[in-house]
Structures are given as structure tokens and as C-alpha cells.
Image (cartoon, rainbow, N blue to C red):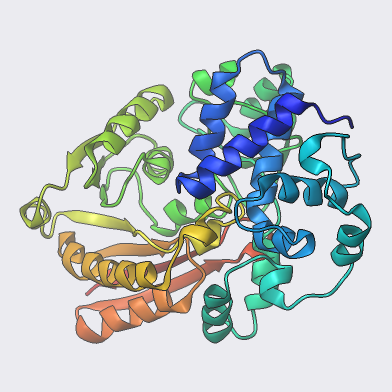
Length: 394
């Protein structure tokens, strides 16, 4: 392929904002693409995928190119050599040694450099997952699949797949996931008639395991207490066939507003939203829920495939704080469950200290609960990393 200067400039500018202004990569890329509506699909894909790839392999590319933190042209040059794309005869690439970089790309480096992660994160992962870490971190550096969750409130999986095909969107079913369709080719599906009609949501297959794990049934009263913009809430509504009641709660009102819009599009009309203003918001709902979903804030290590910039923003201090918050939510929010009811504690982390250990700590100090089941979705199995534990209130 031929590299055009305006596309290279867009990648450099986007990288600069991500690393120097500490912004989220997905938001910066989205803004870059919106500012240039004349770019075609191929140009837009090149900018997004190249930016994500350089963010993902930042440490490795720095090592092989000898670049400092802010030498984005050198990083782009090293990436082009790695991908066997011809280096244009432009000023910023003049002092680039193709031969040296090509030789460096073939060398073996210690795992934190080879897999492009901070040393502290490698130490933590090796300590917590000694047998799995190297395999999982390799998987987390692969590009994430785009997975759709069909909305069974509107139609069945085969009908939705057929409608997508009519719009030129080819999908592949996966027998392990009842509602999942994998995109055969990466493309923007949000402009499709099927999306606007509420026939599907974009939701990773690993994430699609969590709502069914709660064992919610039509007619139940269910609370999703960390609902956010509501991906799992909508999945619950579909599993419950719009029967019963789902109370979607979050500390951020704007996220619940987004959930309301998504629920209207999906035809999910058994959802009510409540902002968590203080501890009274929780106490008022004591012993009221048949099922409770606690999809708690976490390090996000299980979703590095789609958020590669998170590994450069994370810190040990943040992980320690989020673990305190996880235990607080589990301890305080579990009062909303009726005796005999069940809750799911879930994270998008692969660290035992955020997962099994949090559940065991809770059970040790709350004899009124018992563990029914637990499950992992490991990145090495092909999708995002999640943990879920099902607990019953005695």
C-alpha cells in the first residue's frame, strides 16, 4: 500500500493527544475521524487500526526504533518497517535506519518488551497468574473480534443474521454463545438499518456470558446495580422476555440517560433507572431483589484487546483503590437481595485479587451467603477476559 501524508499526519496527531494529553484512545480516534468526513472507509480504517496498533506495541516499537517517548514519527516508521510498508521519502523519516530496525525486529526481548507492557504490570501478572500470564498477555495483544448480540425481543438469531446479510453485513455464528454473531469483516455497523431498528448491540462474547449466569427468569425483580450504559441490562431484558422488572442503577446519571435511549431502540420496556445518590439509595431497596448483578469497576485488564491504551494509564495505586471499592460494593449492595435470591459479582479483569479473592473475602465475613458457581472467560479462549461468581443469600 502507498502511505499518504495527510493520513500519516492524522496518526501522529492522534498519538500525540493520547499520550501527551492522557486522553482515551477510542475517543481521540473518533474525534479525528469526525473532523475529516471526506476520508473514505479505507483511510478511516488505516488511521484507526494504525493508531491502535502503535499504542498497543508502544514499548516494543520504542525499543526496536530507539525512539524517545514523544518521537511519534520514528514509532510510525518502525511500525511501517514491521508491516513491510514502503517508507515514503519524507523529512521526518530521513534519519531512520531501515536495516537497524529490521534487525532489531528479529531479536528476542524479555517478555515485558516483547509483549509491550510496563514492568510493574508484568511483575503483578506473573505473581498472580504464574501459569497463565505469558499466554494471556499474548492473547491480550491480539486485535479484538467485533461481536454482535442479537436482540431476541425483536427476532431470532437466524432472522437477524439474514437481515444483516441483506445489508451486506456477513456474520459467523458461534455455537458456544447463544446470542452471538461475529463479524466476518471489520466494518462500521452503527449506520445499518438493523442497528437503528434495535436488532442487535455490539457486545463481546465474553461479556455475553454474564447476564445468563445470573439465572434471571421472566417475572422476576432484578437489580443491575452498576449498570453503566446498560449492555448487560439490555441482555437481561431480552432473557426475561420483557416480563418482570429490572432496576438499572449507577452513580452517573448521564450513563443511565444513554441506557434509556438504548432501551427504547431495543424495545426493552421492563427497565427503570435509578441514580445512586448516597447509601440511602441502596438501603431503600433492601431485601427487594430476586437477582442482583454487580458488574463492578475494575482494572480492565481483561479488555486490553480493545483498550490497549489502558495498560499505559493503569497504576498499582489505582488497582489497590479499585479493589477497596469492589469489596465495598459487594458488602454494601448485597443487602438488596431477598433471602433465597442470588447475585452475580463480575469484573472484566483476569487477576485473582480482583476476582476469586474478593468473593472469598466477602464470604468469610458474610456467613449468610454461599458460592453456587464461578466462571472465567480467558482472553486465550478468543474473546475478552471476564470473571463471574454466582452467590446465594441463605
